Amino acid sequence: MSEERSNILQVSDLHVKVKTAQGTLPLVHKVDFGLKPGRVLGLVGESGCGKSVTCQSILQLLDRKTTHVEGSIQLNGRELNGLKAEEMRRIRGKEIAIIMQNPMNAFSPVFTIGDQFVETIRTHTDFSKKQAFDLAVSSLQDVNLSDPADLMRRYPFQLSGGMLQRVMIAVSMCLRPSVLIADEPTTALDVANQMQVLRQLDRIRSEFGTAILLISHDLGVISEMADEVAVMQHGRIIEKADVFALFDNPQHAYTKLLLDARLSLPINQQTKEFILS
Ligand SMILES: Nc1ncnc2c1ncn2[C@@H]1O[C@H](COP(=O)(O)OP(=O)(O)OP(=O)(O)O)[C@@H](O)[C@H]1O
Ligand SMILES: [Mg+2]
Image (cartoon, rainbow, N blue to C red; front, side, top):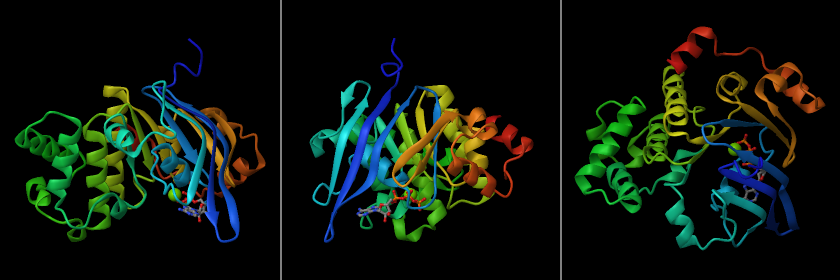
């Protein structure tokens, strides 16, 4: 089987352009990468280099009026680029899910967490309301949220950013998607909750074979979680390598700079054992 065919997600020659008053500007340029089942690809690069735009273009979440996505995004052999919004809605959440960098964007302010969680589950399954509610509650417990039944009755604005982040992580993981795009999933969390979330990501990867694209500014998290790492600069992937090769022997000057800039790896052996236990 060719390299590309064994990938559950294959992104090829991806370009994203945005229309502005000054003309069309490129945000993402000629990006190629593949994700394999049960493997983690880390994506790193300075703020504004195009990581979130890349994620959103894969999920077809960018505004079609102002942005233009070119290239191929194949999920399990099926082309996503250009799919109708309705078809994309059926795939999103079930086959490919995203943990967004800003959790506020992921929820409607006018419905409770429970209504939104149950609705998402029922859109993709034939679960009864009770079954969906129970799955939601157990998924909230998985991300260390206490009193999930109470949480289900609350509105998004009644939760802290870190709690909402964990709710979104629970929603995105509960249907065991084949591909999970995690855009800074732990940035808003304290250390204990970061560990819990990384542990859950590792669990769905190993138990369900979910392929993960993990974006993080924390190179400690990347070094522990990722199998391969892609480095992005100015909308392009400038280097991609196995995690050990990249950390031990970076090729590109920018990658060297990025690695030199890290003060220390915050994850030590003890926390690694905790994540993977
Ligand atoms: N909808 C949009 N319309 C126009 N420009 C955008 C849009 N979204 C993002 N941008 C621009 O695209 C570039 C890449 O943004 P992006 O959010 O992908 O960066 P990032 O790598 O995720 O950064 P960070 O690490 O801070 O999250 C930035 O210059 C940003 O201002
Ligand atoms: Mg971002």
